Length: 321
View 1: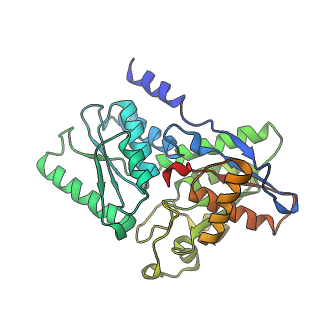
View 2: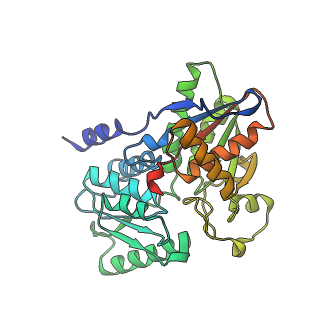
View 3: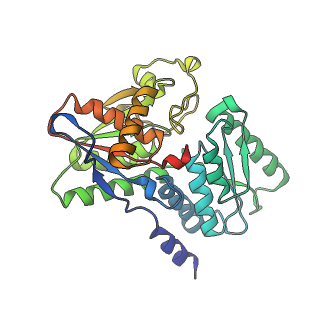
């Protein structure tokens, strides 16, 4: 099988996840909440879309990496690392993953299914710590090898490249295709904000089609986007939280477009914990904390509007927690 055939076969496994309305959770004012089941992707999250696109871009389009020769490195708060390692293994790449040391053990276990090369920071350093460790590893490796050496570690850098946004635009196109068949649209898209690529990618497509409102949320312990929107810097006051993958401070993410966000919310643990119980007990959806936080925000919005459609992404499985 040639490389294009291999990529095409892998692509068949990714995306085309279910889009279904909640059926059993009470929703006020005749509103409907639609859920995009991104946990159905092979490694368990929307990041399979992103890393499929990145590997294909760098190997097929740019010819900057080679299977079996170029080792790949990436930093993560969990799901991205699992997807990077999974896609890399499927395509014949050696992968190295850098992660915060205070993640749930299940996240480490999921990464280790696909690669033994996992490096962890000290517990309290979160994403800033992974960036520091990633740079140290790259520096040591690159110091030993010439710029033309194909065995130099290559960082996919998913949070800084627009291909990640394009990958999530594909998710938005699926949503439009599914709902157009039912003659429905999305009025509000509720999005967690990590590096901004999911919010921007899906939101771009929905806004062009239906002028959907984009609602962003942060953990109450680290309301990064909320404060950026207000033009204040309170990063030193932020605390650790359990909505892994969002609420990361001190890093410039080029795809967090503040002008693009119509409204921001913060979510407290009691809110997402309650929403998680509803998803599990009422809908049988065993999803992660950030998915539950998305529902918590959607339920708050439903109290203020009538007869509208709200979209949330079920980013990953509870198996990551």
